[in-house]
Image (tube, rainbow, N blue to C red; front, side, top):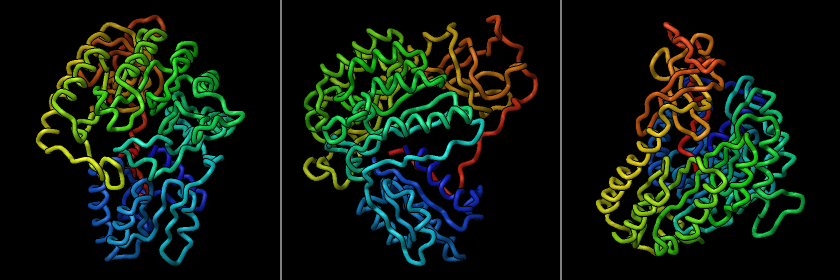
Length: 453
């Protein structure tokens, strides 16, 4: 989501005549786009703003704080402490022009009732793109700051979504990822079905039949996931067989304390529905370890759930208390050493499953979108339809970014390795020189993305 917001603001600035420069030392304006879901990104923001303040003491510079942290009292206190000139919440990003024209400090923290209708297309030749279909969230999980930072759910009109998709396809995009805090609730804002808006399953079908090669989506909430979404994935070939379905905990007691609105049994039914329609579905999840009140028995339920589901990958986090959330106010945190020890056990469990799942890919042919050069010269990196990171040697006639058939010949828990195949199904000869695809661009200094909210 933050990457998409960064692109939105960059495009707005370029349209106003600004140049994106490669380093902070060359910048007149530095905008820091932020996350506030966990405490660690906030500390990174403090450190970065401290460095920028030192530069500003030596020469004129405008410093801006954008995104989720900017929406919070905590972020606004940080902005004051570090002499930030511009503060823009997630709903006010297009006020950047007004902010730069202002001769005084500019703060805009309003939520909008509609989303940006006209988003500039990506540069020509872009292979992957994000497409926001909604913002905000109507759920109120006790640990989550998102409803505070991004406001209530607002779905984007299907016409605007398809219009932006057409522009992305014209730029050469092969894979689009639909974004939202809870994509499965698309079209049902504040509990009311919006007239003329399709269900998320039918939106998937519309997007998948647009001519795009690949469609992915994130993030799903199990409370709103329906079997029709799994059916849409099965009956629309462009939709990738990858489902990121955060469970957060395998314990019903912890799920109730989190106010997740589903049970372990209900979640497992979703997994059954997905695999009924998509037998080879790739499943990923999110887990919070050490939520307040989590017992060893609760944690064991989470480990057991892993063995029932068999996740291909997971984002695993130690619970991070966030001021302004019910869990911060009402629940007592667990000792750090307990959370750290449980996380280590969970990571080991996931590594076992990732190794098993990836090993099963050896010998198979995978459709791989290669983005560009890997870290080692002569190799390209990308990912499969199931989101598995993949590295291949550049081949004769296939040494640039694009989508290729790849035979997997080796796997680790975190990576697949293979060879590019020709039209005859045979491995193409390896190029002896370094890959000639375009280099991975550096992060623009003008907009500094931090981990996504």
